[in-house]
Amino acid sequence: MKFKILEEIVNFYVDSSDFNGISYWRLKEIFGIGEKETNYDPILVELISEGKISVNYTLNPHIKQFKDFSIESQ
Image (cartoon, rainbow, N blue to C red; front, side, top):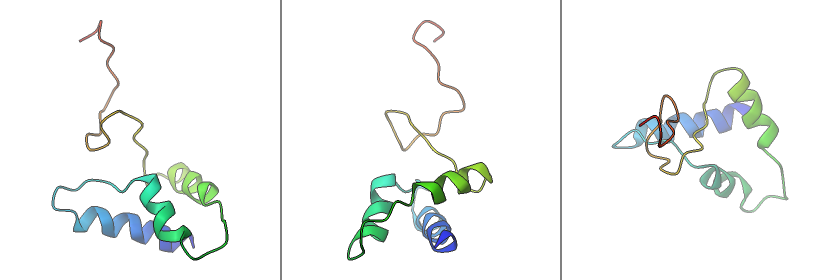
């Protein structure tokens, strides 16, 4: 399952015309429909720990910021 998730993430990124990443909710939709409730979070955490994927928690998910800048520092 870990490889299938990583493959889906990579394919979504490469096939995107603007190289946007896939959302967590989209992954849940892809792997959760038609299956019993399964928590894929540990697999995602493992992929993050291995440096194979990254996570973006900003308000605009289409822009990966290198550093979150406070309003004062801007």
